[in-house]
Image 1 (cartoon, rainbow, N blue to C red):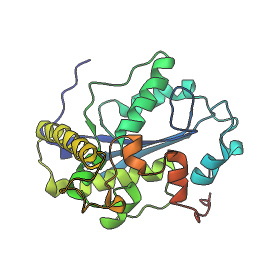
Image 2 (image 1 turned 90 degrees about the vertical axis):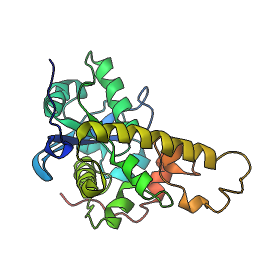
Image 3 (image 1 turned 45 degrees about the horizontal axis):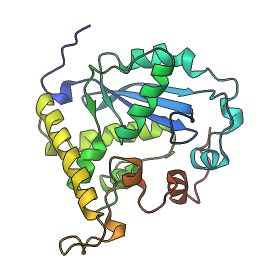
Length: 251
């Protein structure tokens, strides 16, 4: 079915989503939570938050990071039971995720395993691409960008909390972005390429005269797992290291 999208992205209903998973490989890891927060013109219109039975054991590192325990997911719906509801929440919406280069392939793989397809006709927007362009010398993890913009991020590493913060970050960039949806998507693709090229250039063997002044602590968060997590080869350890004193979310 062909969908007519509004000319300006601010008039586009958005479905901002985030996944919590048992790891980073969609071939072997599973989704344990998906949060979808729908926005229209900067306001939250509906929230979907599903804990998912992964039908496997959650690694202890993931439990510590997300505060989602095995007991939380045992007996919850399986992903195959929720797919129709997930796709219905995306229908008619632009799809937004922070570092969508992780979440979209992961969810696309799981949908394909179950006989479904990612809604490729929907516009997709990644605020990380814009943050990395606007703040090229700063760390651009979601929590850091949200704090920089004065956006609250309570319950970090829980899907709905991260999804809502992501939507608010995108709207906070509104005055710095083109109003036209098509122009925005073209600019996003251009900046994504530039961000990737800058990272590849900066990380060539042997510092060049131009990039010697950029320290590792200033490395911008990028668009792949390696780009996002810096020197730490294990991304899960890198994530957990950022929240060693996090307290469990109250329920």
